[in-house]
Length: 211
Image 1 (cartoon, rainbow, N blue to C red):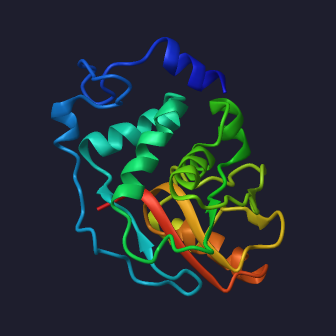
Image 2 (spheres, rainbow, N blue to C red):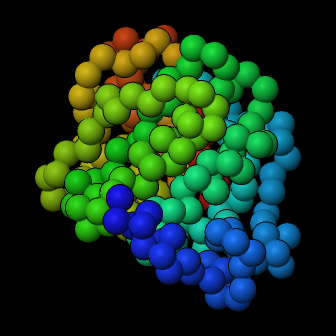
């Protein structure tokens, strides 16, 4: 909560170029115009447990700067902006009535360092925008190495060191929410757990994807 208060009392400049920003926007007009938008109808193919997945932006330029601000600069106050962009450009049917948003859980050590869970903040902001519930039914183990950052592509795709487990029964229709999709290994691992605990369909939405 104190991160949100700090954003209001001392708003940052543009998170991409440090220039002047209008009001509470996280990007100046020039950087906002450079956001690398994807085709609105472009979805990823399904995995073994995961159905469709979608992101409105490539993880590049100002979009990458926004994600880094949220994750590494404790800028929790920009989560509503990221959620608004996802809501405005959402593909048809992905966030249909009856869907429950499920944040991809952060590693406990990183969550403590930030003071908040970035995916949870994004899911809550998106739920407010779309009128959808949020269910925190996944957890990450705190054991050493249960993190994705720094792993090679082979380890990610093999699901190594994820440590995802259930923290309750899953809703029947879930949409996983995270900041970035890299290989999809984390989303697939989360979908496997949700399927095993009651979900009939699991899709995913992220703010950006690695090209």
